Length: 107
Length: 107
DNA sequence: ATGCTTTATCGTAATATTGCGATATATAAA
DNA sequence: TTTATATATCGCAATATTACGATAAAGCAT
Image (cartoon, rainbow over all chains, first blue to last red; front, side, top):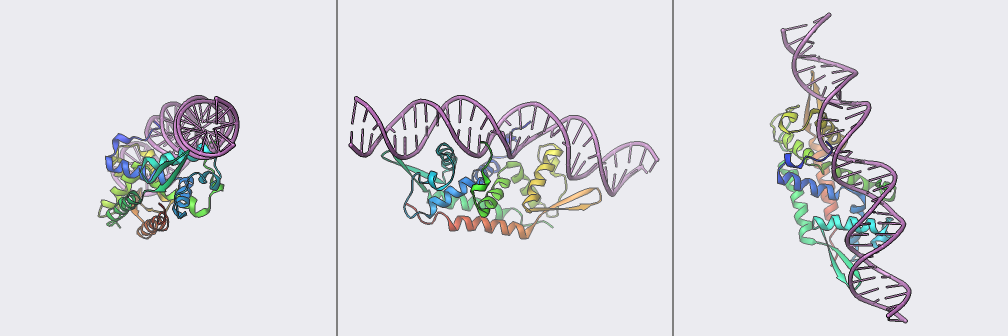
């Protein structure tokens, strides 16, 4: 009652759902767009850029790191975040596989 | 405090996040895969197939209908759900645009 | 060493999501 | 008409997510 019944579904369904879910928040979309649009990796100008408190941003960054779509490199007392190119492409392709393998038949 | 601060983000960021979020649940992934894998549109064998109660499935179907990725056609006292092909492709392409337009620069 | 800056984590409040039993509604079947 | 079947909706309980202030940790500047 209330929890997502993860055990009912198989690993690939759960993994796919996690990818979608992590991307399913406007702040995280905005963070990815901001990091992606900088020529160099940018640290927490993200906090300045997006209108959310520093702990909130930090939490969102943690979620994004959880699926490996960004990486943080420590530079002194700052952290430089950047898109993890390989994983980025991998996630895109996992999602595309889902779209291509599902929804072909029907009606 | 607690709500997603939708106002902070622009329409396209919010819309993108909604698409991802709706797809971000294993039951909804499983439902889409099930509907997609039937040669004909299938009604609520979905309830039988997935191990969740009928009201729960109904709720998930409602979410999926909300983004237009499935359509339900009433047939007597049954409802026949199917993938909305056009919208399916459109969503795939919206997501791909996001992936292609973001994360190109960096590092 | 002391204070400043940057980032992460903890704890908590507000809200949202998930899941389901009970119930409503509508068609099919008897 | 009565009963069964299929689906949607309501209302609630359990849990998860979002957001943030306070605080910790760690490096930089003085």
